[in-house]
Length: 392
Image (cartoon, rainbow, N blue to C red; front, side, top):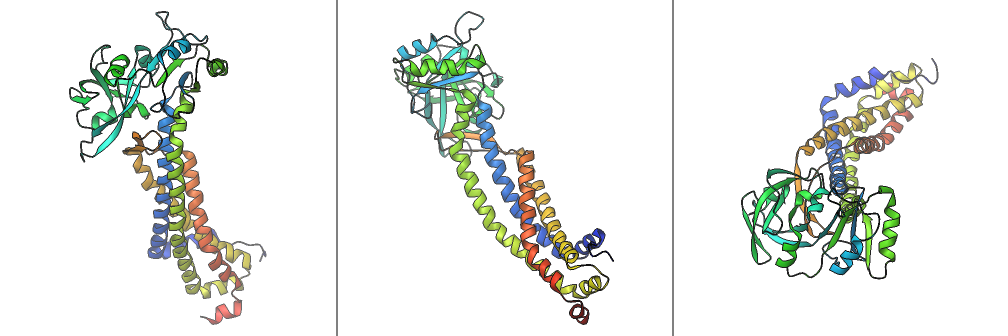
């Protein structure tokens, strides 16, 4: 027989089918670990996608240097006038610059289900601010009227907080505000905000300055020139970022923490799954000693015996990975809400499964199978023909 002959694949798969209970238990343990691993990756990706999709690449956000977030920033009215006059800003159909000067404030509202208090972003927008955010569309009611105490709430806020539904009233800034519309901004952070008239919010919160400015570039390729003009002007102490990059940075702290913590937990849990796979494969070797001796007597080399048992272990890992992914994929139908640690405000987002997460999860599961099977496979390959046959 060819010294490199491989053990037939149907033989390997038939052994897994014969030991259905142990196969199911071992693959189930790996499936749980794969589920946790995939869930963490989906959670992290969901947070990042929510924040990245919040911004438009041809929009620019201006905040005070060193602020980090809009809530911490402050732009004086005189500075806002200077920024509006910088060349390169797009002009609307009415001939005015497409600029929105925006106060951004955190308020506290009770949740509908638990009555626990949570921070919610209230954003003052000008008419251009609505146009600059085409991803946010009204699904109920109408847009607020400028100069009034009317607001519109993001869909996640309207669902989750008392007083934020259509027709309800919220009290903040020492006055009552009526919710006249509900926004659906897709999988973006605007679903977790309340919008109102910019000047009215400044008055309500007794603020002399805006928090941030948003404008559209006339030429998307002119960003570097516009940013340099803003940052080099001695009258300004501001920095400019593309809107999508700005919001992506808002997710990094929480996404990185969840990713590191979740990966560490997955590795810890995987140790138990690997031990389970190893025990299963050692038991398989012990129960099939005679078979191994027969295969060796028929001329199959040690390498083929080792590869056969490794393939069994890898198959267990693959089954577990596929089962874990199947369970994790169901989470895409759910949305959750938590506090963004960088902005300290409520953020609603969904789990996100993509091809990269599928590949990483299956790779992780195969690694568990490989580590769990390598020692038992080596033991099977080391069995002497005479000793194996004598065991019968």
